[in-house]
Image (cartoon, rainbow, N blue to C red):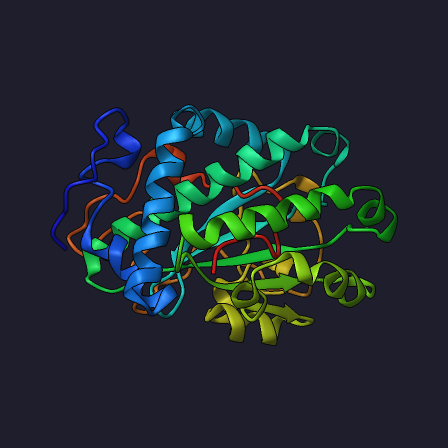
Length: 293
């Protein structure tokens, strides 16, 4: 897909010719289905990027910090439809550190995470010629009602990010799959739904078992990590030991299974790499419902 010049902004590489591709405009056209509305959203995005060059320039540092606080990583392959998959286990460790982070930190972390994911999906889109979106798997193991009530501002921040993402990262999320949802999640979700994008709400899927996870994430069971109920023993460094040791009935595996048609994450059709090392270590701040439409 041919690159198009960015409107009047040469101050930052984050709003450059490389970022303004035809796939960039395609995402807006699909999201807003109206030329005038698409143009308005694009103008908002360009202006926002001009005004937030500092945040965009610190994405790698923010990603490295988030990675140490919230267990998050990318599966080493894509869905059956070729979409990259991100897994987060935000409550599998002591949450006291990230719970005490400022609202500004969570906001910037959320923006940086979306920006990195957007770059990955955009590059895969240009490489394959197909619109590529992200599948998110959020494991809520360990989430308590007490924590949710005491830290409601974090969920409200995700609502703000959701609204921002509508014009900044259109067509980024394919599906948000929530696994191991606690019994009170439906009530919590209903209470915060008014803060979130209506289109995003429709993309959230509650997977009470591994069969539903496989269906919603478009993955075979042997590509689902054992801590999510599948049979793949994922030995990624970011996965906490207590999670790796959790027995969900999955069979043993001697490494990644043979791909089922889709290329491994990090490679393109021509065999080249996708994204920088920081992109392959993508981390999202806790946001089961706070991403773009």
